[in-house]
Amino acid sequence: MARPGRPPQDPARHLERAHRILDAAAELILRWGYDKTTVEDVARAAGVAKGTIYLHWKTRDALFTALLRRDRVRLVEEVRAAEPATLPELIGELTAALLRRPLTRAAVVGDSEVLGKLTRQKLERGTSESDAAFGRYLDELARLGAVRADLTADERTALVTALVYGFLIPQSMLPQDRRLPDKRVAELVADATARALGTGAPPGQDVTRATRAHLDEIEETAAHRLARSLGQETR
Amino acid sequence: MARPGRPPQDPARHLERAHRILDAAAELILRWGYDKTTVEDVARAAGVAKGTIYLHWKTRDALFTALLRRDRVRLVEEVRAAEPATLPELIGELTAALLRRPLTRAAVVGDSEVLGKLTRQKLERGTSESDAAFGRYLDELARLGAVRADLTADERTALVTALVYGFLIPQSMLPQDRRLPDKRVAELVADATARALGTGAPPGQDVTRATRAHLDEIEETAAHRLARSLGQETR
DNA sequence: AAATGACCAAATATGATTATCTGGTCAAAT
DNA sequence: ATTTGACCAGATAATCATATTTGGTCATTT
Image (cartoon, rainbow over all chains, first blue to last red; front, top):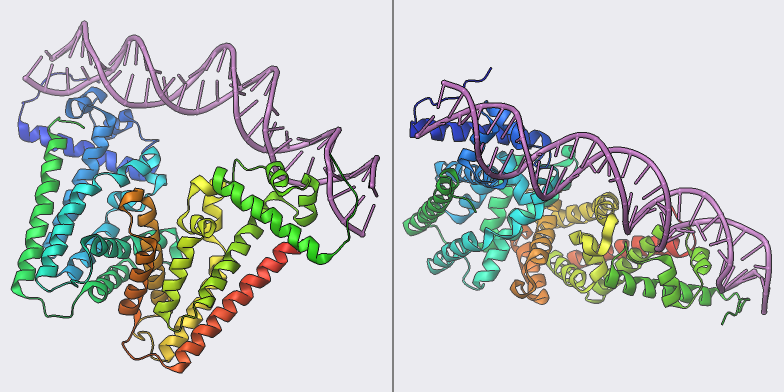
């Protein structure tokens, strides 16, 4: 039932296949968890041979990293598509998007059911860089008078983090039926962000611009990383 | 080196010994973690025989429960001593007290380093009842115009929970040197609570009274539970 | 009556052995 | 050139036997 050989070396086909593999991986991981999902499984589900997967990624881990990065790119795209103009809108959309994306959501919430042994790792790192960018964005907003200037950069970041994580994590530990609707959670986070960090000043054009710029930067970074993850490079 | 026998059956002495055992347990658990702390260890450190511990508690678990309950009572006492008059003050003091008490803190943050196999358990339950009381308190405040009335009870609770957990958990995952000072964290939580839930209305006498009443209720419950934990009853 | 600590059963750890699985490679097929 | 899948070594799991630990009891002592 084999048909080794070489259908055209079309780079577009190559990329399309990478995505197909990632699709398969996503489904399997969400269903069985990272630990229980083997490369063989993924290959079978994607309709390719195991070796083919290693044509795309050096290691199993690299495949998973690519998967998360793709999810992240899509998340950012969703947020962008909503065209948030202010910090609260941005955070609200971010939260909503997070709640919609099981993989990234699991990574954020630290769901060991899904992530298996990777639970801890994926959380810690990756943060520092993006955090810095977010910190700069908040600084800019403070300069523009859109967020409180009486907090240090660390404090502003901690505050936003607290709101997002503070809603996501406890909610995820609640039994299904006691959780607030996802949409409502996003609204509450947005609202709380406005109240806890905002100044009440009407947001000007410059805030919109800064927000857009920040999203550009985030997407740029995310897209770049994904590209690296899809172009054989590992680590 | 033994001296079995029966120094007076003074109930005060009995209680004092219970506390001595708990002191020993607390120290050992904080140093070695729950899993690695044996009943024998505790007995030795407390200067009693192992059997004596079982004169106080039916199981090792009951001892640990008592320990947490005592810590909770002390926490509540500390909060009370600060005489918070408003919700933000209450939450701020609660956070500060939480940060000062390694055991309860570990329980809240879910520190498996300390709690060992109990990490999960202790979190989930025990909540429902106290949660209900807190919910009623928030309701009362809403009625008094001290907190926003445009939120459901669940939402108000979720919001406060988010603030406290949202600060404690991410901070606990940060490397020591990047954490904000405990005191500052408490201030930020208090401030955020005021902004996110407050109405801006000046707090009246009735708010103070409601807050005090709530603390009374909490302490009452906590003290009652501790008493049960120290008076042989197990479960 | 009150406290002890030797004692026991059950749990847990250790180790040795074997079996199974799975990440990753690469010669072969086209 | 490209894809495959048999193949391999190392990791992981399963099994079984043995040793150690430890939660909990209770006859004994004061």
